[in-house]
Image 1 (cartoon, rainbow over the protein chains, first blue to last red):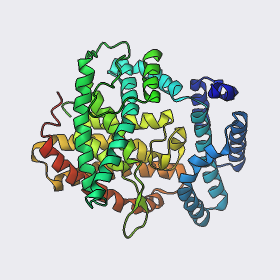
Image 2: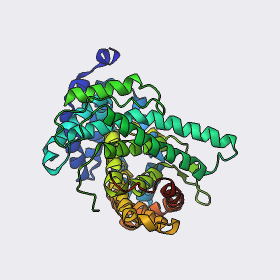
Image 3: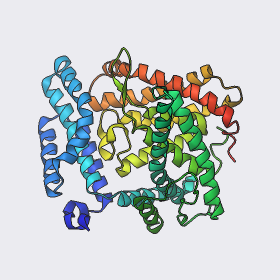
Image 4: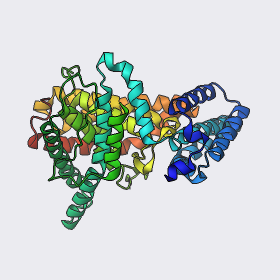
Length: 233
Length: 189
C-alpha cells in the first residue's frame, strides 16, 4: 500500500520503456565528450529523482562504493590528459549510474523479472526456457537467506574452535552443506512431481520449501515472489 | 564441453540457483585487506571460481549468468550491497559480466581433468579463467568506460591480482577436498 501511495509518474511508466530510455541515454553519452551533454544528462537525471520523489540517499548508496574508483580516475585523467576530459568522463559515469539506478528504484523486482522472462521468450528456439529461468531466480532468492544463515552458523562454530580466521575452515563446511542441500532440494522438487521435461510451457508451481531438515520456513517475500513468477508467465 | 548442449534438468537448475545464492552470500562477508597491497578484497569472486570448478562449464556459467540477472533485477547482492542497473554503467561492470565466461572456462577445464585433479592443476585452471579471462574482458571494458588507455587501466587493475591469486589458491584447495567427498559431482544425472 505504501508503495502505491508513493507511486509517481516514473513508477507507473512500463519497465520496458524505462529500459529503452536508459539504453538510448547510455549509447548517446558514449559517443560524446561534451561537458554540455554531461551537464544536461546530470540535470535531467536529477529532475527524474525529484519527479519520482526518490531521496538522494538512494543515489548516494550506489555512488559511494564507486567513489574510491572515481576519485583516482578523476585525478589520473586530469593530470595525464586534461581536466575537461576528467570532468566529462566522471560526469558520464555518474549520470549513467544515477539514471540506471533511477530505473531500478522506480521498478519493482517482480516487474523486472517479468520483463526478463518476456525478453527471453524469443530465445526458446535456441533452448532457453523462460519458465526455468524464472524458477532459478525464485529458487536463488529463496535460498539466499538460508545459505547466508549457514555461512553465519559455520563462522560461529569455527570461531568457537579457534578457526575463525581460517578461510578454508569456513569455505569447506559451507560448500559441503550447500551441495548436500542441493541434493535434498532436488529430491523435494521431484517428489512434488515438477515435470522434468522440456515442454514446460507454464512456470513450475511448486514451492521449493519441502526439505524440512535443512531449511527454515519460507519467508513471506520469497514465497510471494515465487507466486508472482508463476502468475506472470 | 560434452555436457554443454544437453537439456537442463531440475537438478541442474537447483545447483545453478544454489551456487548463485552462495556467491551472493559470500558478498555479505566483510572485505579483508590483502597483505602488502592493502586493497580490500571480498570473497565474492571466489563464488565464481567455485561455481565453475564444482558445477562444470554449463551449470557454473549459467549460475553466474543468474548472478548478472539478479543484479539487473535490482537486488543488492554484490559485495558492499551494490546492485541494480547502475552497476552495469560503472567502471567495474566488465568484471561482473566476465564471470559467466570465466566460470564456464574454469568449469570446462575442471571437467576434462576431474579424475586427476590436484591443487596445482586446479589453481592453474582458476588462474586461467578467473584471472586471465576475467581481466581480458574487465580491463578493456574499464578502459572504454573511463577513457583511460588499455595500459593505464591494466596497470591500475594489477592491484587486484594478488587478492584474486589468493582466491584461486583457496578455491583449488577447496576443490580437491570437495572432490574427495563428492567424487561424482561432474556426472550430470
